[in-house]
Amino acid sequence: TSVFILALTGEAYEAELAALRFWVDHLLLPVYGREISTARPWCFEWDKHLEAVARLHGLWLAWQQMTDAEAGLSGPSTWHRDHLAPALLELRAPDGPFAACTTSPSRPNHRLLATPAPAEFGLAT
Image 1 (cartoon, rainbow, N blue to C red):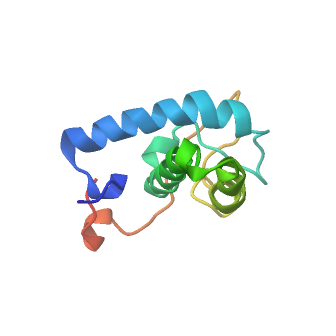
Image 2 (cartoon, rainbow, N blue to C red):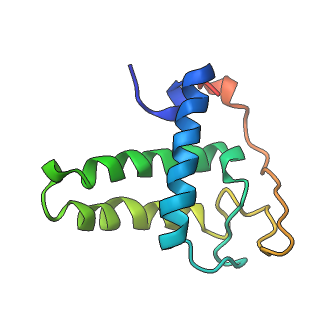
């Protein structure tokens, strides 16, 4: 069985999403959030963007593995280089999943870009 969030359904999906939200809100954003702009958008309702959920979950899984003592002393550095930087570049790209969301923290506005329905690909939501 897969541990990836898109393979989960029902209560298992909701529990994993709640844990992911906690990690994003209490570790990722406070440390790596940076300024929000049209060139580097972020959506405060990121958990409604399936691509963002998938990318952030993969990033979180890698963080768990790479910050474990078994990853060695260079694990965190490898996580930054191989996982964090590429994920944030994709998520915060001007044409990324948050491109249609208003980027002003004082006037946030969430809007999903049109994409094929996940069910068409056999993915659980």
